[in-house]
Image (cartoon, rainbow, N blue to C red; front, side):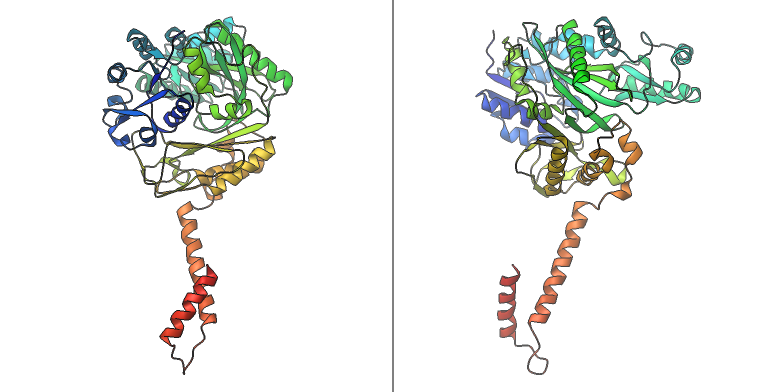
Amino acid sequence: MVRLRRILIANRGEIAVRIIRTLRELDLTSIAVFSEPDRVALHVLMADEAYPIGPGPPGESYLNRDRMIETAVRVKADAIHPGYGFFAENADFARACRDAGIEFIGPRPETIATLGDKLAARAAARDAGVPLVPGSDGPVARLDAARDVARQIGFPLMLKAAAGGGGKGMRLVRDASELETAWTLTRGEARAAFGDDQVYIERAIERPRHVEAQIVGDALDQVACLGERECSVQRRHQKLLEETPSDALDPAGRARLAEAACHVARKVRYLGAGTVEFLLDPAGDFYFLEVNTRLQVEHPVTEMVTGLDLVAEQLRVAEGASLSFGETPPEPRGWSMEARIVAEDPLARFMPSAGRIERLRLPEGPGVRNDEGIYRGYDVPVFYDSLLAKLIVWAEDREAARRRLLRALNEYVLEGVHNNLAFQRWLVSHPEFAAAHLSTRFVEEHFDPDSIEPRGEAIEVAVLAAALHAGEERLRVALPESNGGERSAWKWGDRRRRAGRIAR
């Protein structure tokens, strides 16, 4: 076994802060890195040590592999935790860490490479006996071949980048007339995003639910499933709200899905924390989608119902230890929901926003957790993902969790940048969400920008104006005119002060 003491976090924002908190509890040294715009970011202020790695653009800082490794070597880091995004699913980066004598806190590079290739991942799932969405056996290199596959599996279908992830490189094709344009656009997007324009085809499942299983594996080849998460509420394949457990599964279905996830993980000797993602059709049948070889954004809901710290589990496994719970994972208890708080304007097609956070008040109270990477006065940069924070709640059942999340969202104050708090309040209040009538088309089918309340700043201005008007009216009634309409300045001031004390 290795003993890790100094951990460099190759990331930023809320996930870097979340990792730092676990490292502090374990009495390990947290080492932050930062780009120039992140010099006074929260993860930099909280870490034990912090080092600059370059300008704002990710390619010159957080995605500069050589600089990241050089920094880790120079500051004598034992390990690198990649968080999610950036280098988290980069097999070459994991190999570079190994070559430099630094532990990569994640799966083996070979596993990342296999599962990062969506076609290889499908092959692994097929070999493990896990159901797959009908589609092409491999990449489809030519448009005429794509037309042949389309005739075999039928429309609608999905074009997917073989090297894709994070909802990128995917396009729905509803009929043959759309295929050629979609083919060209998907390959171009895949080439630009992943440097690989290989595309494969799957049959599109109409109104599916997106359910994923949290897996963890150790060096002793023990694999466990820590329950599933419902991730169906999405916009352009980007998740907006997650919960666990999923209302779509009964105990038998839950057991089958967990077994399938573990079969895939064992097939590739999975090490560390990861997620096996599935689509559920309206009949309740599930199909393998992909494996994310990293910690997911939504991992806190699993922590809330299991009582585990998944970052701590990652560290244990990286040191060569077995999973903390042995062969029997804890039984999930209660219900948890997570709302992603992002710097996007729902009233302007979710356009990303940047600027200074002028006011911030995080909700508190029983069963409420905040994972945030911001503070009042922080300048949100333009270079990175728009995720600012996550609001997580726990309660005994789904309805109690929904009500608690709504209460917490109503307490949340975030001003200075456009954000999606009003959208999340609309979502959690919607009757169809309350009834758990979910699919990946939920937002497309139900969201109307005119149905959400004005932005927080507009509400506050209206409330202040109303309060000032009411105060002036109280003073006018309480301070009658005297001496033929002339007011005594002394009496005026004394009465104003007394009225003010009462008003307060």
